[in-house]
Length: 240
Ligand SMILES: O=C(O)CCC(=O)C(=O)O
Ligand SMILES: [Fe+2]
Image (tube, rainbow, N blue to C red; front, side, top):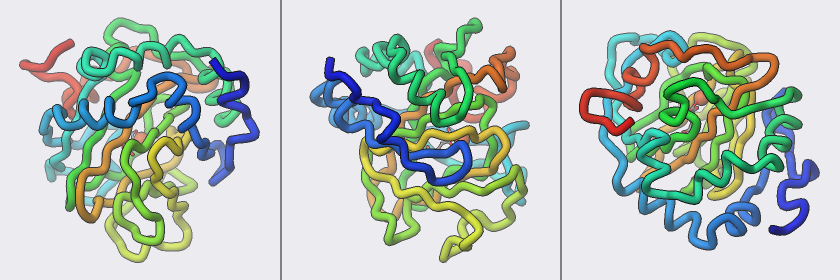
């Protein structure tokens, strides 16, 4: 494996405890067909209705179900076996720790395989609701490209945990940070205390791989049983 594939020099700050980092070289080194592999998995993602949950919803209407497609960590690992290598990679963890300013670790409690990494697929007109994260370090790896001269498919970040009444407002207000979504260009952030969401893609799907990592500041606690079913990761007919 190449040395310094994940050098901290590659971190570009977009907000406090929020960075982007080009992981293309690293991902190619892990699997030469990483993008095709993940797009192949995305084509098999399950349709779900995302419902309000304690850490998830920050939108005005708390009753509306939002459609999207997901794969939980167990489903994803089965379809893309090399993802397991990311979990064993200390270089990756170190980079994430530098970005969020804490030591970090993967979730280890029973059932963590379900949410330690997941895939989100948004189709045209579908958005990811404003929310905060339960874990202190989230890595969002776009698989598809979304031009940041448009709002479509963009990741949007606020400074605080605030209720957003109109997440689909266009143009995106200046007080929010908009992060360009280019394939392999990861966003690494502590999203526990700042609301963030995703604008709907214009045409074609928006596919992301999410790594949910814990920090020494925000340590892993037993995950609230309510969250996984609300975001479609678990359910009666879903593999665990
Ligand atoms: O899919 C995305 O780009 C964002 C998802 C997200 O914020 C999360 O899973 O916590
Ligand atoms: Fe999030």
